[in-house]
Amino acid sequence: MSEDYREMWSSLGLNLEAHQGLLAVLSDAYQNIYLSQKGRPAGMGYFDFVISEVHGLRIVELLKEKAAGKLIVGTFCIYVPEELILAVDGVSIGLCAGAEVGSEEAEKVIPRNTCALIKGFMGFKLAGLCPYVESADLIIGETTCDGKKKAYEIFDEITKKMYVMELPNKKSDDGRRLWRNEIKRLAEKLSHVAGREITVDKLKTASRVVDAKRRALQRLSDLRTHDPAPISGLDALLINQISFYDDPVRFTEKLNALCDELDERTRQGTGVAPKGTPRILVSGSPMAIPNWKLHWIIESSGGVVVGEEACVGERNFRDLLGDFSTVEEAIEKMADRSMGINCACFTPNDERLTDINNMSRKLHSQGVVHYALQFCTPYLVEAFRAKNSVEAAGLPFLRVETDYSLEDAGQIRTRVEAFIEMLRDGKKS
Ligand code: BJ8
Image 1 (tube, rainbow, N blue to C red):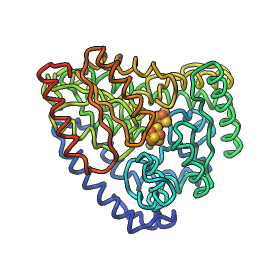
Image 2: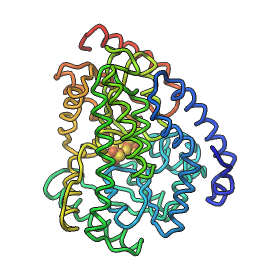
Image 3: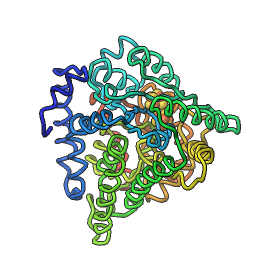
Image 4: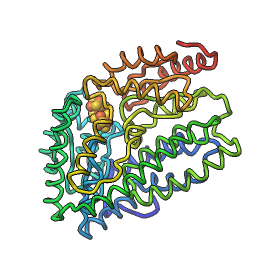
């Protein structure tokens, strides 16, 4: 951290000692996992800086925006339309959920056998470690999986900031109508809390900002089709994680500058790993900062991750909102866009199986590693159909079920190494 932020953290009610410990662990992990990579693009310097200031300078910025009258809104899921938050002069931030810190505290209020992501956001709050949740004026949840929707009841008792949207289970006409109405209700709620009307002009400006960010992320994804890969999966994952925290305009500008550099790399045939390195698509549960475990294991075992069929990845940016001429039309488009996000919380969810195979083809991936957090029933169960579908398309499939701890890292590494060896030999599975 470039400044001493203790006063700010203390005013937010953080547990300074525990927070210091968290930052020290994070900084070591970042050094070992990220800064030790060879041949990184120079443009990653900006994202390294953002991470080093994720609980520092970014919080200073948020508090300044709050003081200037902006609404700080925390979210957990990509079904929540960011455009609506920006249209009320709000700032949208993904909340801390990617580390097992505070799990002892979390297990006092939720069962031990809850997924690491839920335990993560609960633990960050209860242990006084998340400056984002403390800075937020409003936190928007959604009825996706059972674990999340029940945990939000407790989270609301603790924070008094929750607003929960009702997501349907099926993408039927009724389901879509329900979700369209929920988006409308959220628009009213945001308007009321912020004291600002959502006009079509405000929405157009917001949509231009969010779609530009999505376009830059699409550009990054397209660049990963090249062999040799111009950027590591670890760095691409980090950029996707940062897209939930950073100022969207600045983020887009920096990412486009990085993509210019990657364009040049592909012209010169420069990569982060030799041409022919086994290419892997990761598919499954989202990976929040600082969950870098699977990418780290794959890339330090001789593979390269070329894409993420996940919410911290392709599902977040694949579809744009596009043009509209009224607020009503924009809301219809948001509902349509949401129905194209193929989360395992929906049933049936055949479209996700198609997405995995389409992405594999586009990215020239030679195998799929399916990632599900322990106790995440939607993704764990869906892995069975994903395996059948990927294998029917002729690619090998590896199932990984894990949490945030490093206890099973050795065991996962052994399986990943064998998988990569098999990809090198060109076998099917
Ligand atoms: S759209 S994936 S961000 S819900 S890992 S808490 S599902 S038990 S996070 Fe998600 Fe939205 Fe879907 Fe994406 Fe539950 Fe599973 Fe935990 Fe999960």
